[in-house]
Length: 195
DNA sequence: CTATAGATAATCT
DNA sequence: GATTATCTATAGG
Image (cartoon, rainbow, N blue to C red):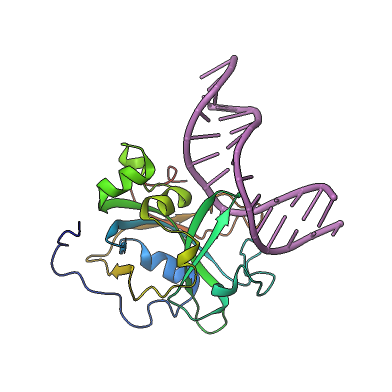
């Protein structure tokens, strides 16, 4: 079921996640993300950090958010609204507590698997939205804290420089004016239209 | 288009 | 004990 990736793809450079969350969130746009060979191109992200009232890390370490206070380059997976999973990537430049929420990807690899998991033929509804994306890639609590350098994760750097736009984050009640949502300009696979 | 059910853990009062 | 949470699907107008 693994299929050949286009040649010339390189893994992410060392230290990719050892930066401020907004820098990582921007740099992740266009990156190829696979989980067990299923995934595609990241087109939408959001940044959170410990100084951010909207972040899970804002009030300090807890059992749930423990991965956010661990080393960069690991996954933070949590359940939201009692029923959906959300995939975050831990990052920081010194002080811990940063993470990037993966909100949408363009389905490219293992699309048939995604369709079965999601039970939807519409490619825009496969990975558009953090809960949908997690379901399509098979992400759940078992991956919480997992290292992003190793199986089942694969991350490949983007080839060119994508045009990245930014704006308000989605679904939060506080700090709504912090423009830490990033997306690929013009992508039809966003969780909602550009704002 | 708007409204609301859905199911659970963490956090708050 | 109550409320809320980085959301999605579906029913109804």
